[in-house]
Length: 254
Length: 316
Image (cartoon, rainbow over all chains, first blue to last red; front, top):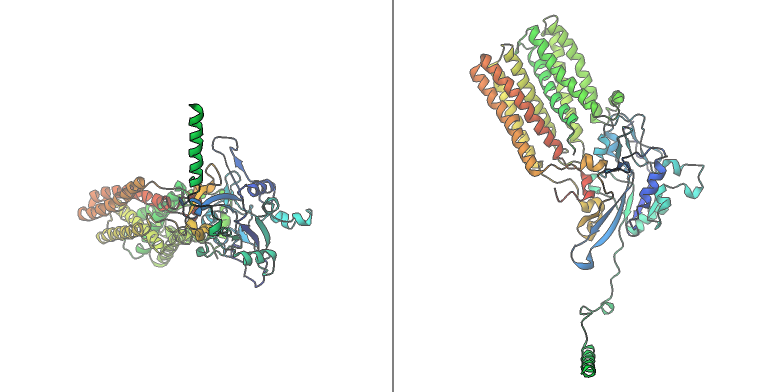
């Protein structure tokens, strides 16, 4: 059913918290996601002409890199690596526009999924997603998307500490956190509170569950510790020393 | 948005078909259009043919056309599903009305009620089609109150043009209907110009700053894309119409889609007879080309919020 489940107070809202301060843009999360999910719930993550001139393929996780701040003013702008995957929105239009009931939001944990055997491949859900979280699989003819690694997080065959999404598991800088954002006391909710985590495109009204932690402000260097503006210009003493060397050189080569 | 020909053909052909079915269903039971079985057969065949060809074309666009029937299930939430349900429902009264008219020569009376039902369902279907686009918050060019009237007026104008042409071919042209057809074309033209003025070249909803939440640091620009080649998102939603190309197509839409059919309809009203029929056939051909250009622009100039992540927002 593509109508959304009734929101219950205190309901589980599983999602990710992504730390833009520590992400180094290594793409390991994208690769680990591809590796797990091409054999997982939404398998395969088809690649077309992977070694050809114009390779194309389905990925659930893409890492953009942005420059933010005033450009062309030396060190005032900064580079931010920006991983983006499905945000498992609380008001996901990708679900309500689905004509077949293939797209659905789970009442028990808020994960947005696609039932591949019902999908007719009309692509309307991908048009309805503001974030570009859904990618169409030309080969299979159905829409694919992040499952929040539903086949890992509830998998009794995995060690308890491995029951997290593949992207979270692999991140070398622990920039991705997984947990219940519906529980105000969970580790992820605390992190969002402490670091002022925010929603992407809040004006769209989709109420994403995933949150992003902003880059921390740069430490401000006190005035007396800053390198002087005229650093590199020789001082008076240095100029005198250079004068002396020139005189010595002249005297010796005479 | 990528202008897929299957959808351009579907929305224009079914729009004209439903417009024609609306005109027939409304006017024939009132005796305001030719009543003969021959006219009935040809006119309903054209209307239902356009609608059916359009629906089949839209199914070609699907990844799994054999599962298309599943699209009838989610009418509670999905405008696409509602469109599917309404398009199929329209066939039922159309069949009753058509059989009564073509085989029994009885388009009035009780059969006329089915004609009116068919007319109402035809309009509702076109409205559903428009709402599929108008309900997508991600695309400024679609999510606005101009879109449903645009679709309805274009459907009405192209449908009336077909009705006038067929009536003239059967020697039953009506002066007042020709004037009404010209007025519908003028109204559709005005609505389209208003739409173009408001949204034609507007950027996407949201900004790179709000899409990344990095606006607090200042201006945001893409430094490095996530992938070296185009992916599904860029192929489907990153389509950008060239400005000169778009301007040329807008002139084609204006000239062939609105001005020429309008002038030819009025000329047909003045001349009458065989000349009118020929003029109207030319008008239909011009309108078809013009409407395809108009619909191509409707897709090609639509900008999706996802391009905020790909540095496409400012360049457009």
